[in-house]
View 1 (tube, helix red, strand yellow):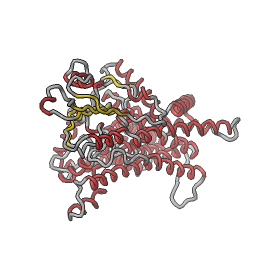
View 2 (cartoon, rainbow, N blue to C red):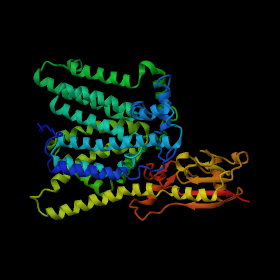
View 3 (cartoon, rainbow, N blue to C red):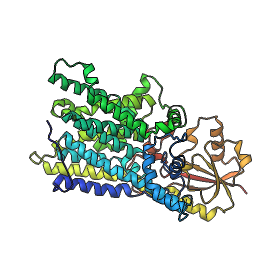
View 4 (spheres, one colour):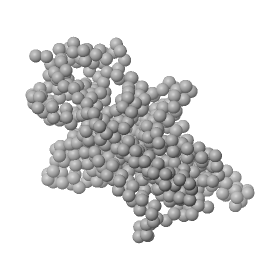
Length: 544
């Protein structure tokens, strides 16, 4: 049996714990840098970010009366709680939440909450690692996970990646403890936290289809060792299993407010399965499509982790598979990850880089074990190995920090300065594409159309038209009305001339630019939202 870990406040920290604290401090800086990206604003620039307006709508509806959104309600509850002091001040007319400055404070509250969840997630990875093996290996696993470039992005935004992964990894911690100790409290805590994870972001359900079955089977084996007459039916009716199921379903029902908002829950399910929240398949829905998606998943993982750490994790995985009996608890991680890939990724037919963060986290545990064995002082060339791994970690930090540089030097800041100098306040601006990918237009007389056509131009008659590479002609098939409009505009055949074009080109850029920015219709080389940071902006002015 693996020793029980008990790193409690008040106990003297050892060298690994101190190194972990340093990792947290470094990540606090790295994850916070650029947290102001796209603010102040009513919409922000991040795709799928929960903007304050959505939370205020939920509060106004008291999370009932049919309220629903494409995401579940739990994180909205947390945001509503944190918003409450500002809302109290608004209720006595001391502030106005509809004023941009106050509204931006709400934006920052959500982003700081994500930052807290991200740092908490690293703590949980460190704790899970200690349940699996030595503190040294746990420390390396945490470092590998922390340097994933997706953390540098989602840790500072009010997207649900950091919060839902916090709850998922916390459930992993109780999952490991169940397998080690089979204690009732861990069963109950696993069920509660799993329900919270699913009520934070629906896709978490994928982890909890095969995993409970595996736990039931392990519990059955334990009962069988104690009493050979035990049947599978006896195990299924055991108080641990029944109690955990009841607790999990009860928490799920309470968090979704099914008693007072069943209509909203039904609408939420409809939105994520059939409506705007549903995911369009990116691959042909056959075996060949699944194979291509698996290949792209490996590409996405490699990009997120960077070549060096991705290779280290694969080597660690291969080493473990050679002798899986040495660390049996590591084998247990295959169950939730396989469950997630089969019942979420394979079902939605889409492998976005953010969907693969949990798989990257699990890979980091294998990489951590490899590095702990590789960097053993008693082995040959220890100092050379230490320098080599140190260089890899520094490079990966610099690689992932590219996202921060792109956010801070986003082209739209320069474009906004140009617009203030050259576009009159009375001019009418048409944005062609999505609001999230344009400069902030609150100060201008503007309108955006996601898919404008030639038929819209005479009616709107804009003085300026703005295009963004975040949502441009590459998304549309030739001979469609949208493609025709954009091709004619780019050719300056519509009575508009290119007045300004800009894209920031920072010196600190360690990504493969072509890999990040390539798009042909829905085809991308790396499926992410990173191509929407620092987009190229083109502004066309009506010919005089």
